[in-house]
Length: 243
Ligand code: Z5A
Image (cartoon, rainbow, N blue to C red; front, side, top):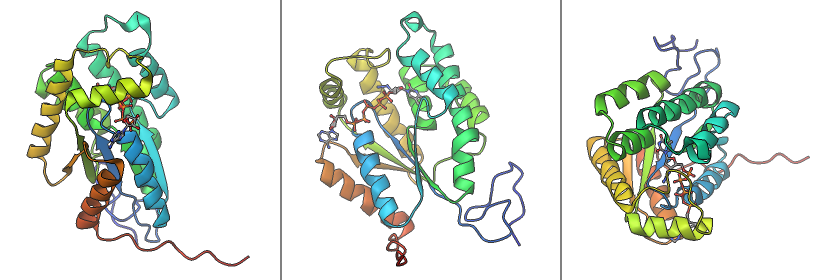
């Protein structure tokens, strides 16, 4: 018999709320950090590593990841008419994108046993809008909780990198193009970095700080080591049956 449903309607850890057979619930892993810290690079490798261990893996990015979210992403980052957007509007738009992503993509995937690897999640809003923009922390927390309900990553990697180094990497990668948020002054990104480190100190059981100034291979090895320390080694891939 399946586990009894939780009050928030989500499955108990390790089980689906709807299946009578035991279905292992997917894990939810998010990557955070300031611009250019190497999230996208590491997420690609990490997802391949999980797949080589026989896991179904779904990648998400924020803002975006759904039709609604991609429209919001364009408004938040690229629409010239949004140049004068108020910080409060920005907060609500990031939250709206995430609310859609959680309900349309993340929770159904986890309940189906798929692992979700997220390029940014709740912590980005806590830090960029709460600390970077200086919005009231209690208001940001309330909006975040309304947007995602009980959905939280099982593990978050914070790729920590000096703001100037991250900016240099991001500029080199984009050929000098800036979106609305990347165009913020350097002090904004240093504040963001400190905000992330403070959050990691508050939640060390969930957030693992990884030195992102190391080489791509070294960073990846650290991610795997942290993962295995928390969850144990991934079993080898399931054998492929002969045709
Ligand atoms: N935002 C927000 O304010 N509130 C929110 O709630 C959310 C987001 C969800 C999304 O931008 C923006 O929205 C973001 C925060 C804000 N703005 N900023 N800043 P995005 O999705 O367009 O981009 P991003 O999330 O900031 O990531 P990025 O700048 O594209 O970088 P990345 O994914 O962290 O790094 P990367 O693409 O893997 O690497 C960048 C370059 O560095 C690339 O050329 C790599 O080859 C190189 N690289 C990577 N690793 C290394 C190492 N180890 N050594 C040397 N070079 C490396």
